[in-house]
Amino acid sequence: MRFVWAVVAFVLATVMIGAGIAQRTILRGPETVTESVTVTGDAPFTLIDGAVLTSRPGAQALSVQGTGTVFAAYGRTSDVTAWLARTDYTLLGVDAEGAITTSQVAASSAPTPDADGNIPAMPSPVGSDLWLEEFQRDDALTTSLQLPQDMSVLIASDGTAPAPADIQVTWPIESNTPWAGPLIVAGGILLAFGIVMYALGWRHLRRSRGPRRKGLPMSATQPIDLATDAEAKGVISSTPPRRRLTRGRQALLALPLVSLVALTGCSADAWPQLAPSPTPSPTTTVVADPDQAPPAVTQQQAERILTRIAEDVSTADASADAALAGTRLAGPALAERETNYTLRSKITDRAPLPPIPAEPLEILLPETFEKWPRTFLAVVEGGEGAADTIMTVSQQDPWSNYKLGYIAELATDSFPELAPAYLGAAQVAPDSPFLVLPPKDLAAAYADLLTNGDASPYAGLFEADGDAFRAGVTSNREQIVNDFNQTGAETGTVSFTTQAGTQPPIALQTLESGAVVAVTITEDHTFKPSNPDAVINVPDTNPVASALTGVSQSSTGFTTTYADQLFFFVPGAGSSEPIQFLGYRSNVLSAKVV
Image (cartoon, rainbow, N blue to C red; front, top):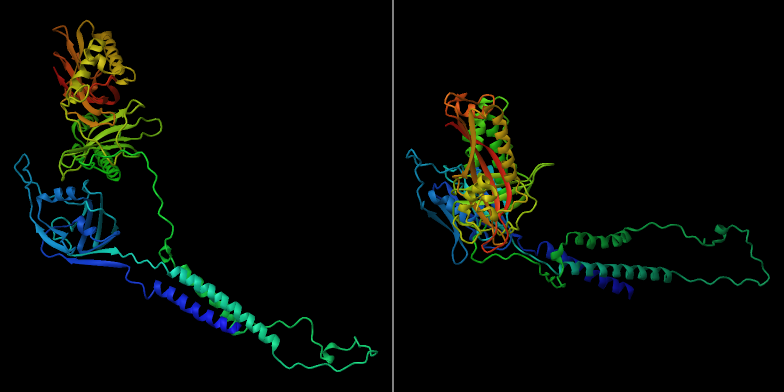
């Protein structure tokens, strides 16, 4: 009977283990599905709409084949289509049945001619700040993506040649086999049971087989000769000789390994999911307005843009190349470097400006705006003993690089609370009445404060404590007057004027109904002779003025202009809090003969 149970267990185990392995191998369906498209025509760009990428669930694997360079990049669909507005392109979309469609899209706008009347050519897509990520290979490109529906992929060659024609998108197919694991485990248990029953049956058979002989009767008084050789008497030894495993037993011991090996290839989808899904616990989050536009950049995108700016400006600084610096700088940030390049060409020991920091990025506040120009504010952590750097970076149109416009060193440890980078913030209009002072009036008000001090009508609006720039300006002007009076008190005068700069302000909202505002002011230091026979000599006392004007003395005097880039936190209208000074940078801008 034991053999019967063993045979039944072996048969059932073979069927169950075989069925479990078959589910994971020959009975399992395909694991991926691929859609292939061959693009016709000579359009230099192909746009794969997000609807194509999300037409099937799961991550996407993109494969593109062409001749020569194969370029691919992805970004928000609205950004990519805005970049393509100047050119014809091929659009891959989906119809109502979910099939991929191909259509040709004509350019919707023409580029604006430059100052000379020339129409700019369509830029290369390689290296554009608009993409979230880009890829470039020779002849063939394959990459894995996991994009939502509002993201699209741009395919190109070099931007002028026809885009690569052969495109494939592959998605995974969910193929769960929840009973493969239980079948293999149950089969293994039955296999072990069958082995045990087989062993017990074999043992019983060995004990019960062979003839049974009765021994001869012995006299009760006849002694047993213990000294007789045991082998001669036919006595069986109490320790049986070691037996070798037969091939049959080796096979039986190897059978459980079949189920163990099969189980090693079983992943989580080979088991039924009986446990309920965990319920997420609520957390405090900042919820965006449903109508709010997406942020201008992502964290990764902003870090890449800052790195590119830092590298290009560093190259420009090394060769004092103002044209190269102008590809990544604008406004006051560019003006101060152009002046520095001029001074370095005429004053041998003139130091370059500090390099543009790129990492680590400590704070990011992108503007929520789908059109252009668009801006983001960043705070980059300073090195050991150095102050953090705050800056604004703007993009004028989809085809332009982001350029750094304002840059300063933070002068406070207290920073207003900002929205998270994935939400961003709206830019405040220059004439907004929802702040204690409109951004367009901030520079003029602070300039008046520097000129008139506590007598200024704006003195009560600004926080005096922690304003290192105001204290520094006052101290610096007193030192300049004292130094000038030591030699020129009888023959000349020195005066100071301060006014708002020409650069428009940039203001981004905070969570406190206020705004971080960046402005510029200019300071004029004027030295004039008070005696008609006197002249102002500058080579020794003011080499900067001599280098910028090209003269060493003047009978009418000199004016040196400094540009100050300033950052403030301006509270919302109705707030009792003062305007807080955040940071500054001051450098010479120009000099002229009066």
